[in-house]
Image (cartoon, rainbow, N blue to C red; front, side, top):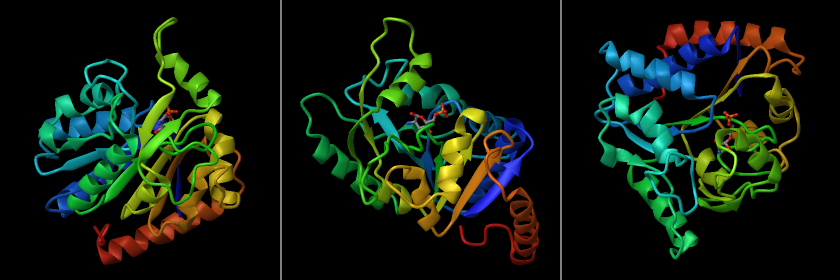
Length: 268
Ligand code: GLP
C-alpha cells in the first residue's frame, strides 16, 4: 500500500484528481469505479472543474458504482444514481448509458442481479481504477464487517452503526433503506488500481486498523493490504492514529522520483 498524507481534504482531492486524470488521459477506454458518501464529493468537484476548463473528457469513460440501495427508484433523491448525477454525471460529457450501478428491485432475484453486474464489469474489460471511501467500522462499498473476503456483488444488510452514520443524510421520518446491493470484496480487489480516501478524526481508528491491523473480515478495508496497487489518501486527522508518518513521507518522496524517471502511472 502507498500511504499519502495530505495537509487538508482540499489538497487530498486535488491530488486524487490527478490520479483520475492520468487514467483518463492514458487509457483509450477507461473504466472507473465510483464511490458515494461525503468523502469523494470534493474529488468530483475538482474533476468537474477540470472538465469545465477543457482539461478532461469523460466521453469514452465507463463507470461502475460500488453500491446502490435495494429497491430504490433511480429518481429518488436518496438513490446513489441521484448522488452521482448531482455531483458528477450531470456536469461532465459522460454518456449516461455508460454509467452503471448495481441495482435490484423488489421481486428481482438479487443473486441474478449481482451476477449480471459482475458480467457487465467483465465485459467492459474490468475496472482500471476503483475509488473508495471507508466507513467508520472499516467497511468498503457496503461490505460490512464479517463480509466474506471473496464476496462478489450481492445484497447486504447494513449494520446499525452504518445506518446511524448515514442517518444524517435523511430527514427525520424519511424512509432509510436497510439493504443495499454492493460490489463484493473480491470484485473490488479485481480492480487494477484502488484508491481509498479518508478524511476526518472519525475515520482515524478504522484507518489504523486498515493499515496496521491484521487482514480480517472484521475490517473489510484491511484487505487492501493484499492488493497489488492500492493507494491510500489521508488527511492529517484521518492519519492521526498512525505512527509511521515519517516513513510514509520518505517512501512517497522516493516513489515520486521513481515515477518521474519511469513516466507517471506507466501501468495504466
Ligand atoms: C457509505 C458508502 C461507502 C462510503 C462510506 C463512508 O455507507 N457505502 O462507499 O465510503 O459510507 O461515507 P462518508 O464518506 O460519508 O464518510
